[in-house]
Amino acid sequence: MILYIDGDAFPNLLKPIVLRSIERLGIPTKVIANKKINIGNSKHIEYIVVAQGADEADHHIVELCKENDLVITADIPLADRIISKNAHAIDHRGELYSTENIKQYLAMRNLMESIRESGEITGGPKPFGQKDAHAFANQFNAFLAKY
Image (cartoon, rainbow, N blue to C red; front, side, top):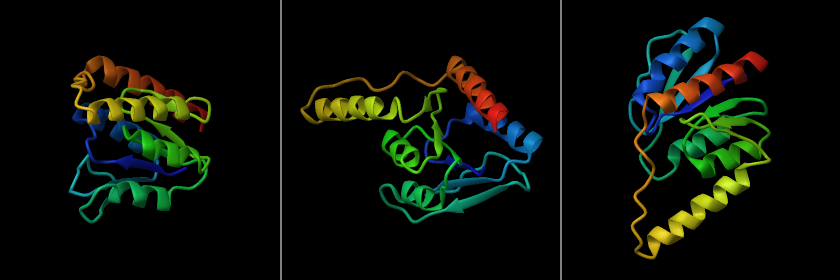
C-alpha cells in the first residue's frame, strides 16, 4: 500500500498524526500539491509539486493510485475517482469513503454547490479542530491496523 496525501488544504493538526504512523509502520508516502507542503522529514515521504491549475494535484494522484492504496483528501470528487479504482479514501475529519457511501457524499456536495451558485450563502464547513483531528486519528489508525 502507498499512502497519498492531497496536500492542498491539508490541516496542520493532522501532520504529526500522519507522520508518526508513516515512521512507525514505514509506509511509502507521496504528498502531492501545487505548492510546497511539508508534513515532516522522513525517508518514507516523497514530496511532489505539480503545475498550478484546478485539479492538477487530483489528476496526478488518480494517475498514480493503484488498487488498495490509501488517499487522504477532503476533495469528494477526488475520493469518488479513487474509490472507482478500488483504492481507499479518508477525509480530514475521519470519514472513510467507500462504494456504499461515496455517491451520497458526492450528491450532497453537488447539491450544496448548486445552492451556492444560485446565490444562497451556505456558510461552508465548520472550522477544523481537535475533535476532527481525533476522529481522523481513530479512523486512520483503524484502517492501518487492517492493512
